[in-house]
Structure formats: C-alpha cells, structure tokens
Amino acid sequence: MHFKVDFANTKIINIFLKQFSQTLAADEHAAMIWDNAGFHTSGELKVPANVTIIHLPAYSPELNPIEN
Image (cartoon, rainbow, N blue to C red):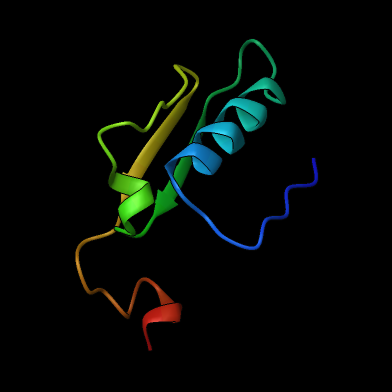
C-alpha cells in the first residue's frame, strides 16, 4: 500500500486507517503505536475493529525519537 500526503488531519487519518485495515487478513489484527498529535486523538477518529491504537505517553522522547 502506498500512502503519501503533504499534510495530515483526521479526515486523512481515517482514510489511511480504512485502507490499512482492508490489507489485513480476516484473522489478523494490527496494533499501531502513535504519538498524541491532534489528528491521532480526535473524537472523530474512526478506528476499524481489526486495528488497535496504542498512544505513547505525553512527551516521551525515549519512546518517540522525533521529539528529540
């Protein structure tokens, strides 16, 4: 799957999650580790049943190198 955008928002993340979940086999479940970007925590986020989102603790540079 190829997914490239120049920006991210909840609408784009929902499209990504839907497309990603469709690549999983019927007996597969995926876990994604995300930071707390606004579009990752939005109340409008639609997480498919075969995907679990695990949020990193706030400001955790040891777990998220992008914060360094």
